Length: 77
Image (cartoon, rainbow, N blue to C red):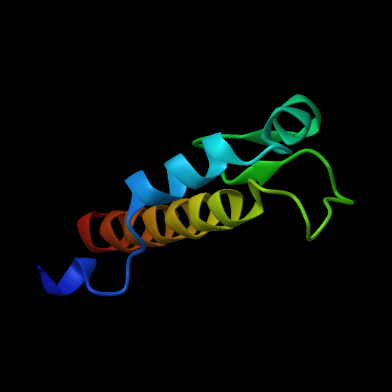
């Protein structure tokens, strides 16, 4: 296992868990998360939301990407 994968949850297992959760259709219908943007349009998102962990991970990934982009632009400019 690579060092970068040591702390990452197994995404296939997480997807399987989400797909088999009986509340998944309800959360998918009401969730306001826009994948790839790191943004959830529902400011009052519940802690019980099944997709909240993915949304937070997506937001962290977007923040890292933006931070690296700013650093690169400063060094190149």
